[in-house]
Image 1: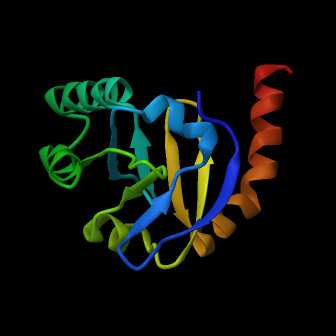
Image 2 (image 1 turned 180 degrees about the horizontal axis):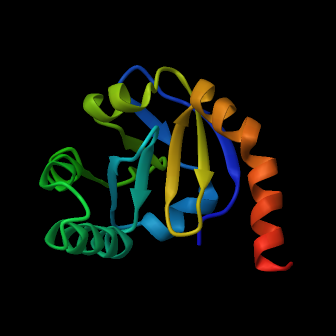
Length: 139
């Protein structure tokens, strides 16, 4: 399970050091892919679940074939190096507006990698959304 928020930076080669709390789940490999405004990083097992769900939604006509195509075509397998760094491909950095400074967040089943600006915009409204969700859950 991935939890927490961490601030990191990309180096000149497009690499970022993963938070140490996340590395043990990605010792062999992880899969990077586009999300709405960020880059997602899954374990191979969790990525397969997402890919199967997306394929099912395409078969049911709920999602366009093109969504599946771009999700798979732009995905990349990454392996942390001895210093815990992964390389984020240029196309994923461009999609998510990743420049130098990043925010890496745990989202339970995946890691999300955000530009500082996009994370600030998302998190600005998140507390009220959490309060609403807590109310719906009856917590």
